[in-house]
Length: 282
Image (cartoon, rainbow, N blue to C red):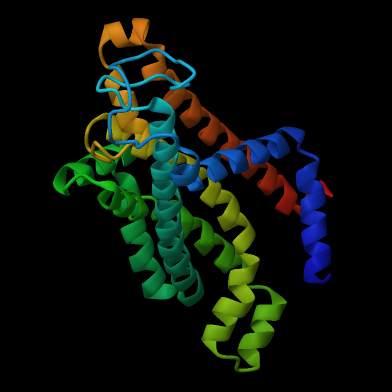
């Protein structure tokens, strides 16, 4: 089967999941809004543009925050920051996990034992505690959070890739390559890695969603993206008081809804991709 036929088959399986297709459209719209924030945002996200804590009006469709900044503009830029953190953290963790999983699974022996022992050690720490400790040690900021999440989320990817490599290593086409004296680089990156992409891509969607949630949680606690730079987490930080929670919903409801939409849509798309890559679902 050529690549075009395989892609069409995967797309056809994905399209059977109507909810995932709808989520993909919503996700695409949110991502485009975040990318185009400098163009479509009516006001600066960091400078006052109206009255303090003003309810929604035609001029400020989501109202203003406690120092008069336009909430709609802040939400757009906050989505941009949160998506950037989630994407880059997922990219780092996936790259590290794939590299270690390939090496561990293919070479085996002492290399495999050492790498998997280190992976097990990292996984033995409570995840959220490890993130919080790392965030407390390093200076809060966007890039700190990206690096922390990127270098904490890799063990699951490494174990997934290692398992796939151990299975593929015993197949006839890999044994034929070894017997033919093909370079290890060719076997790893041209034969094994392409056959591992599908499960890694599916797993990466869950890491993406978790990274967005983690960034929001850390920023809410004041350990992530720092004001005045907006993120979905530090916008929610303004809803700590009971008066805001009960009397000024425009200060926290939009950010909460955006987080829910992003995470739910990413998870639905990930579930549909898992089924689309599974040949048993034909």
